[in-house]
Length: 172
Image 1 (cartoon, rainbow, N blue to C red):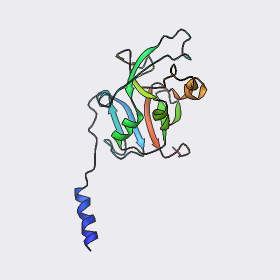
Image 2: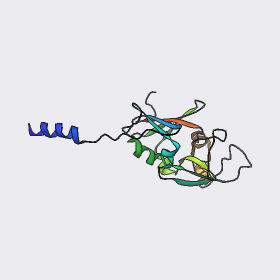
Image 3: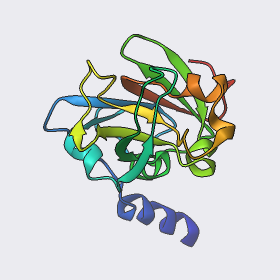
Image 4: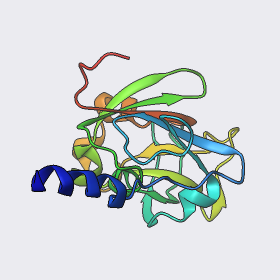
């Protein structure tokens, strides 16, 4: 009986962490295995919310876009900080672009290789015209291992949504 009363009390004391509503245009929507939501079962984030995450700098080129590409400074957030914010648990991120291109990226890429979700290029917000507003980037210039089709395909631009999955075999 005592255990039952304690568990009932915990129902009323355990806070549910709901994220604030976005105040600007929504740049990113997360679904799947997320605990902290702000719109139904999903998370919608605007630029201000994304910029509030810890920001990381990555200087690299996108050689597959242009052979004359010079290195650019990209600023953005890590998947780990994003998952912490939304209470996300999973091994795979199914990332969708504005043009409906979809790629599964292991969460481990963001830890192992230092990949980021870039939201600024050379200090300016990345426009849709320039492959923004969000891009997944790897430190291609710093790690020769990343300069191949596997990671070029994972460097998705115009990111619009992420589904947090237990594994890449999980269905839509």
